[in-house]
Image (tube, rainbow, N blue to C red):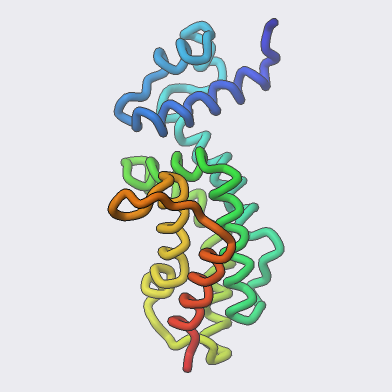
Length: 197
């Protein structure tokens, strides 16, 4: 059965993500991709100029999907705890629904593609989250702090838990499976740490 043109493009993107997760960016090539997709070596070039164009196109398209998912039902005018709860729900939901794409973005964050990916991804996203943070500081819900400090305290615990969950083990190799109870217990600790006393 022959694939439709749009299906071929999606197959190429999906297989590229899998290969990059499995072998890293260094082990990824258009020839290997075509072989994995069981298509002609020339076919990926019908949709993408070259390897870099393919990777950055995936990053832009999937980055927009991730941004939309993270900002779903999020109001930058919301009070701090309420808005952060929506962020955690959305981010964790995206990571668990699309673990492959989350791992793909982790590969990009540690590569020469990071700057260009973040440039596109952060455009509207950063403005919305920055406004939320500013509003929380203006209302006296948060103490003023560098944005990087806020970000690290607000989201790093959740990303660490998601990594443990995806790997199926925590530090020391102990078996780990994420639960709602663990997620929201951690969230409560984060809110307690950040909220102005």
